[in-house]
Image: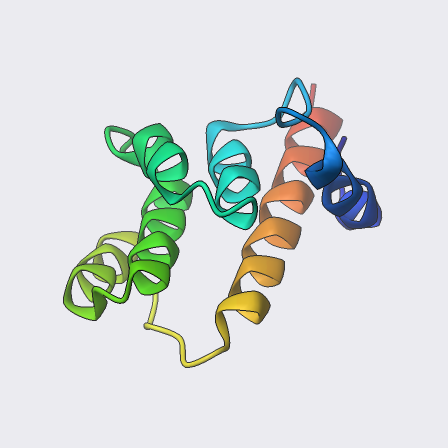
Length: 108
């Protein structure tokens, strides 16, 4: 599963019991977040130290309503906090991470 064209497939996978195999930890966290399993999503990114995980971590704290903590994670990711809806932010992050995965696999 890679690339923006797979966004619909990723969304369709939300009906499964677990995230699709072969995806990044950050995408798995977003998958669990969309399934209203915040604790599981947070557990996945809690100890990661990548820009992508910091962005997902920020999103999760927005979902939680902890904007101070979300802003901390946005700073760690080097991005400006967003005023987008949570749904729009989820879509954007998911598409970006799927696109990055596609680009990474194309380089191999």
